[in-house]
Amino acid sequence: MSLKVRIIPCLDVKDGRVVKGVQFEGLRDAGDPVEQAQFYDAEGADEICFLDISASHEGRGTLLDVVRRTAEVCFTPLTVGGGVRTTDDFRALLLAGADKVAINTSAVKDPNLVTAAARRFGAQCVVVAIDAKQTGPERWEIFTHGGRNPTGLDALAFAKDVVDRGAGELLVTSMDKDGTRSGYDLALTRAIADRVSVPVIASGGVGNLGDLVAGITQGHANAVLAASIFHFRTHTLAEARAALAAAGAKVRQPIQGNLR
Amino acid sequence: MLTLIDYGSGNLRSAEKALVAAGARDVCVTRDPDRIARADQIVLPGVGAFADCAANLDAVDGLREALETRVREEGAAFLGICVGMQLLADVGIEFGSTPGLGWIGGKTSVIEPGAAELKVPHMGWNTAEPTGSAVLEKAWGGAQDVYFVHSFAFRAAHAGDVAAWCTYGADRFAAAVQKDNVMGVQFHPEKSQRAGLALLEEWLKQ
Image (cartoon, rainbow over all chains, first blue to last red; front, side, top):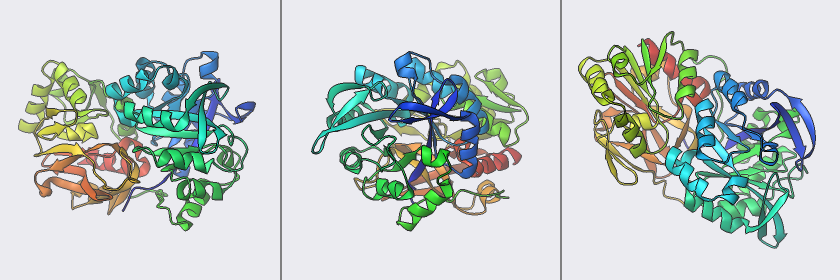
């Protein structure tokens, strides 16, 4: 009878196909995003995340068609990010069927976009994706453009700032850990989660079920995001739920079969 | 005929797809007061801020009046989702004070879970505990986890209007309200997988 931690499979998408980035390089095609989303929906994913990893540096539009087709067959909350620059981009994605929109590069370039989107659509749908690299003890720097461009911005100060501007959730990805399968940057996740009033999603680096558990118990995240361990069937969502439950986290038991 | 009110809400399409998946044969997505005046079932979606949604509702000439007549006087079945449910209140307290439809007594106010680690927005799957609503009983037969995403909650003036409760830390608020032909759900049935579709299916059948 309480809010559950969320397990979120993330589909990195490029040109309408799912890929898996290793520190955002060396992409590997892993299938059709709509089919994958349906699969995770059936497995009881608590949310599904699409990130268009090519959009912000190739100037491509977002994944409207993929989102539309997914919303027709999946009745699971959907977060979509990549290449979002304006409140009209937000609106188009929300109308296509996204529930939340993640922004990264745009939030750094134009922090007023966070404010404007929260005012127009509500804070609940504004997710700021924080891509950060460690630069010193308890110090991380924000990167943009899929982790390629340093900004000089302190990640903890930036996190507080975007929440003050109206972000309803933060998606925290360690650029040091992403693709390494060596676990989340727990210090980064915890430093942000303990400083902000909104939910935090841990992201980047999951290699096993223990990493998901640590994201909650040590990273203080409200949700755990992972890609390759689910895509390549290293573990199922049911196994992830069981591991989190065994560690004392509250997880949802999705309904199997018909209710009636 | 089922009418889904198009007044600019972001979850319009998801709501439409879920209603169809739950068995609605003829979903009319419209803001035309003449169509609403003939609807048997009316669904009001809504995400975002109370004041914006109320303003969007008022921006359509004759919409509020058509709803008042069709739902309050003629008894068409009504379902409000998320902010569409909150609009049933007398008043929304969110960036100022905004009048709602006033069909179910109460107001909205910010969620106060009472502990720093319990974040707001209240975002994710939490348990809705029905209080005896026939629709919820038929749909679920007990409590169900459903998907919430909101920072404000409906504070019903009469506990008897609360069809299901949700608890978040120290706060307890209406997960669903119901009074005669008017129902509202704070969670998103269109995003709550089987539990959400089951509710929509029973609501459509009643």
